[in-house]
Length: 395
Image (cartoon, rainbow, N blue to C red; front, side):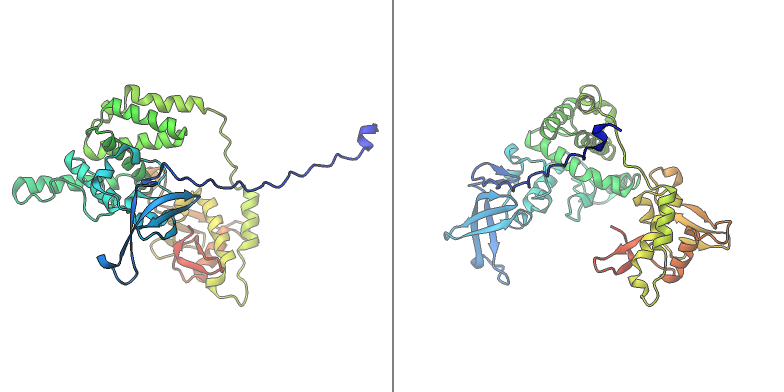
C-alpha cells in the first residue's frame, strides 16, 4: 500500500460567509415608469376619497424595492414598488415617451396604470389593431368599430370580434397568456418610437435587436417573436412577410451565441415512483380526509407517472363523475389537456397489477376516490398547515 493511501484526506476549507452588499440608493434616472425627481404620485386618505383629502408627492429616490416620496408639505414616506402603480400619475402623453419604456414588469406593472391602459387602447384604435379583451383588463375589446350600429357593418364588427375570440381558443390558454406581456411590450415599443401598425419586417428586426442587447437571453427574444406571430394571426397580418428575412437574424444569432449542451433534470424512475406510492399512499388512522396530504401527494405523483403527464396535464385530472371511472381491472381517467392536441380529452387507463400481493397506483387511486368522496382534483392543493383542498389543483 502506498504512503499516499495511508495519509489522511485533506480537510476542505470552509468558504467565508458571504457578506451582504449594501443596496445603493438611486436619486436620479428612471425606475420603470417613475422618473426620480419628476414623477408625481397621488395619495387619498382612507375613507375620504375627495379632492380635499388628496396629497401630492414627488418620487425622490429608490433603494432596493422601496421608493421614497416627498409630499408637497415636506414629509417623506417609503412605498413598496409594487404599490407604486396605485398612486402614480401616468398620463397619455407619458405613454408615448420613449424614456419611460421598460422591460421588467415584475416590480411596477403598467397594466395597473389607468393612464397607460388608456394610452394603449387609444393607440390600438388609431391603428385598427385587435387584442383579446382580457389582455388590457378594461372589460372591453379595443376595437375601433365597436359602436357601429345596424346593417352589414354591425355584422362585420361582430364577426371580427368572434375571430379574435376564436384565435384565443385555437391554442392553449396558458400559451395565449404567456404571449400577453411580450406582445404588449412590443406594441408599446412601437408606440414610443412613433411607428405605425402593422409593423414591417425591419420594425420587428430592430425591436428584436433592441431586446437582445437589453436582456441577452434566447427565451425573451424567442417569446417576443412568438407573441408577434400571434398578433399577426389575430389581426390578419401577413406573418410570412413580417417575420422573415432580417427579422430572423437576432434569434438565430442568440441561439448560436448561447449554444451549449442541454442537460435536463432526470425524471422519476420506476423504483422512485414505487417507493413514493408505497410510503405515502397510506391512510393514517384517526386523521380526517382533509388532512391526509401525504396520501393525496403520493396518489397524484403515481397517477402522473402512469399517465406520462406533465404538471399541466395532471393538474386537470379529477375524481369527479365523468372524469374518473373504476372497474375491477383498471381505472380510467379523462386527460383534458395535453401538449399535443392529438391526445387531448382522451381516456387513459391504469391497470390493476397482476400480482394480488402488489400495491400499485390502481389501488391508491381507488382508495383516494373513496377517501375524498369522489370529488376534486387527483393532485389537490395542500396548504401550509397540511390541509388538503381538493377543490383546487396543486399550484
